[in-house]
Length: 305
Image (cartoon, rainbow, N blue to C red):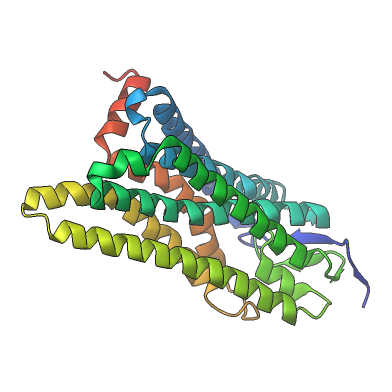
């Protein structure tokens, strides 16, 4: 076998049928532009409205920034492949795309946990909220998440970089994903797969435990609120976050909670579209449509008042 440490790859994309490329290009482009617009508007609303300069909206702005970067990691190359029919990508380009994909998906993951902690502090300790969630501590939470994310993403990328591949192999995906790349390698990838499962498992379980424990305390605190109106008001601040949690983790778990060596079907590519494009596109609309403060700020920006 003619194996190399720096081969080129061919991304097979979403469909091998040329007749489907134009409709898929239109759908992908519409979702990408909608995602850019929604996240940019949310960032603008939070940045320009002093009433939104609170810990909750600070974390939301960070999530929106991550979603903006997340969709830009995979969508442009996918659109190029759909438009030209050429899915070729260099080994360095593939590793670069995978690194940034890992950065933003891990950062999304950690930010959702940080936002759960913020809601826990706001609902379970309302009198001490301003003391618990100071700007310095908010910065530490986000900065710490960035540090952990970069270490994880670099480790993930290093697990791929020493492997050997045949030149111009076809990747049955629309971006450079860890699992499909491992399956195409000429090298023995058993250790790489085990290390990846351990890394993803430890971080994933830690984040899920953090979110579950935070919301366990939140629901317990809400249950003790005497009035139904008070309960609804407390839970209303969590409804958007819970919706985003469900969208993100239902698609991510469907992809990663299984052995990497299992086959990658077309259904899994559809699931990948959900968490790489659809979910980041929907997030700003979920938060803005359910939040009167954000809607008010957006109306002012759009001169609708």
